Length: 247
Image 1 (tube, rainbow, N blue to C red):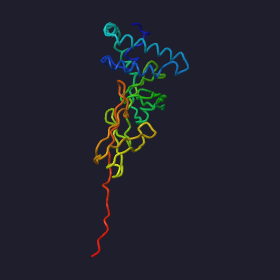
Image 2 (tube, rainbow, N blue to C red; image 1 turned 120 degrees about the vertical axis):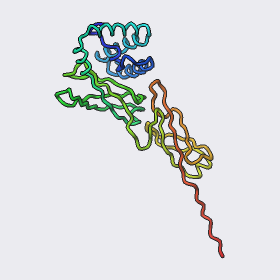
Image 3 (cartoon, rainbow, N blue to C red; image 1 turned 180 degrees about the vertical axis):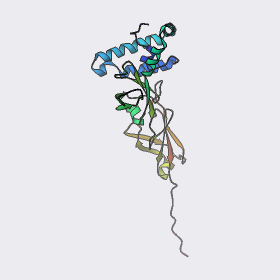
Image 4 (cartoon, helix red, strand yellow; image 1 turned 90 degrees about the vertical axis):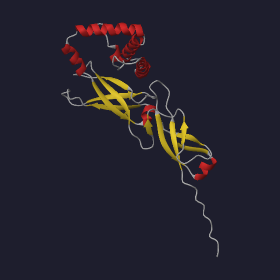
């Protein structure tokens, strides 16, 4: 591998111990994020797409990956230690908290990076998060001078919310209904995780604290698909007032 050739693992934002599933997931996400059609066919977007395709073709094939890993090991043996340290120092990792709806609908935001090694203080980058991005995803942003050639690795985490609570890819919330609806059953509406209103089918005779599961309305999963929304039903018992009898 020549000095000018990109590191396939770095292109995908992965380390060399990554699994085949992580390679597929990173390629799928990054190829969508950097697709040339989304950037007006810009040369940089075309270059990134070519790098992603080359990385995926090499690392997704077990035989080609083993050969590539051998080349990396040979190159590491020829490379002086100070040069490797310099490359590591150019990379920095930053955690970013996103709302649940941001993972579902996508978003754009400015990310400020604090790196003690940067004499100019904080760096600012524009981050694009595609729709249906799974929590835990890592996105890479190319650093500017004086750290050109390095990367900001952004780890996406879920910001705790008021209405919805995340547990893995599943979301949990509560829905208060009246006692008559609990007895007779029917349909209730509530705000959905991605915005808009969501219809919830309430079974007749539902118990207080019982969970109603809505499939596919949770957070995106790393390997595709979405988790479920678990709605905990709450209500007050119906109070009946009996007229007092005369003495």
